[in-house]
Length: 148
Picture 1 (cartoon, rainbow, N blue to C red):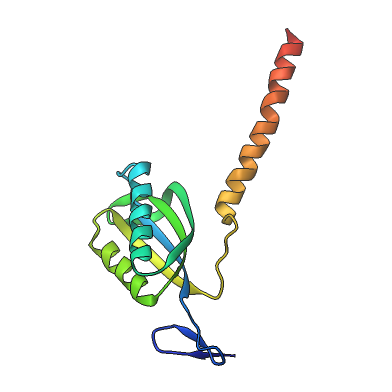
Picture 2 (cartoon, one colour):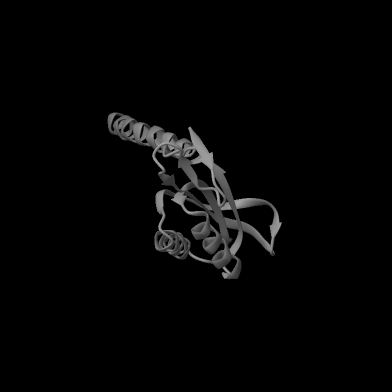
């Protein structure tokens, strides 16, 4: 049985243990930065969270994707998803730093009950497509060898 404490910490009433809040954090960064710069931004976020006493369980870089509408004059954005276990103060600091960073277009932080460590549906679909492509490639090579 848990007790909700101010600041989104939870305590087990019998043991007096505290646990940190769990978050899914999505970041959209400008289209004109490189993929390496977007990955470096993820590393910066991870460092801020670890400095605040938290941990990052998963980082997914979704790549450069089209936007439905322009955001700060950008038609595309680099997307990243982070699964985070940290104190609320650490997440507040991450959001403060992102609001200062000119490369960040938008971000969304959602508090969750448990972290989903599996591949996101977007990356799972990409992985399935890669597997299908790998399966097709040897057959195509074998067919062209047989035709000669």
